[in-house]
Image (cartoon, rainbow, N blue to C red; front, side, top):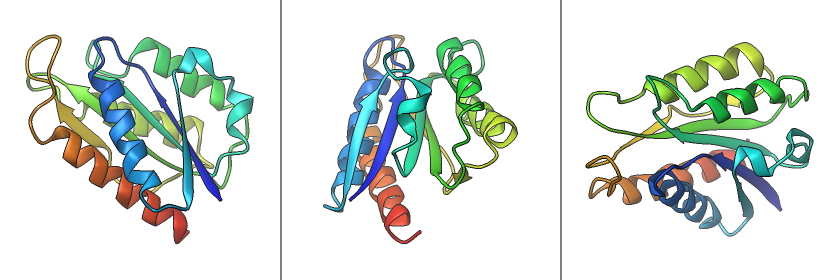
Amino acid sequence: MKSVVVVYESQFGNTEQLAKEIAAGIEKTGEIRTFLSKPKEIEPTEIHAADAILFGCPVHAGGPTRGMKKFIGKLGKEGLSGKLTACFETYMGDHKSRAVGKMEGMIAEKLSGLTLVKPGLSALVVGFRGPLADDALQKAREFGSDFGQRLLTS
């Protein structure tokens, strides 16, 4: 059975909801297990056994959270070649794709052995603390399902 680690940061629970829906979409295949974790709760060495890793966080100060940037930097020393990856974010206002774009750039630079299999998912948060926009959870589940199918056929 294949496995995916979903690493995320969430301040008000919106990105966590997204991570859980993405994981549910991945597991819908019936052939993949997912593990959710926050960057501070998982050691980079624990990711070696996984077939794929997803990165998610809210847009913070125009990019990924400090914790996510630090975590991606630490992974650069782990030699994770051959694994699939994708990114997701929550955003407000006109900040769409700012964290996803920067995380994808960091992955290309620091984790060049990972294969980015699909464009990142951006989910709108309505109001400072949420909730997520009406279609966000459905899009997250579809994102996860598509990612899972790509993992199974890789």
